[in-house]
Image 1: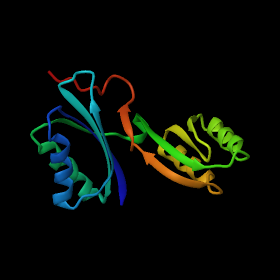
Image 2 (image 1 turned 180 degrees about the horizontal axis):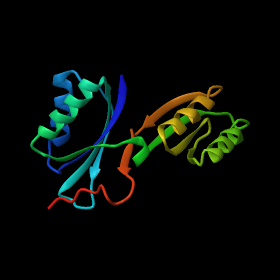
Image 3 (image 1 turned 90 degrees about the vertical axis):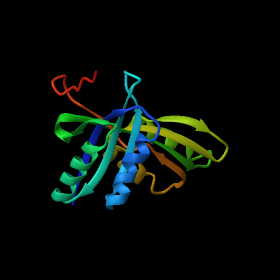
Length: 166
């Protein structure tokens, strides 16, 4: 089993995300994460999907997704030739005495404290999935009350692999 990151450019129409996720569901493919948002051209959405399987399954996923009517372009984002980022917000239970150690940890990971309450803080951190995983691992002695992760968004490096749609 290996992971694959797909980037889709699709028409920005209602139901597109549902049709894409429905394809995965019908075929029994797994979606590890999916993110979607409008591009610089509001007619199109960029969808990033992280999935896994053996080589045959991953090849089938690419072919099946490319056949969908609203999908204009499908690229596999190679980790060495792409930039991936993820956002996580982590609500951590802390006492007033512990608060400074969470602030220090967030600073080391270039995270931000985006909310402070009497018994907890919310840390916002962006970066590679491994960076976020490591930060969460370091919170081992604290109680994580809630955790929200966006899944990755990614783009290829450079300008030679840009898709222009008209």
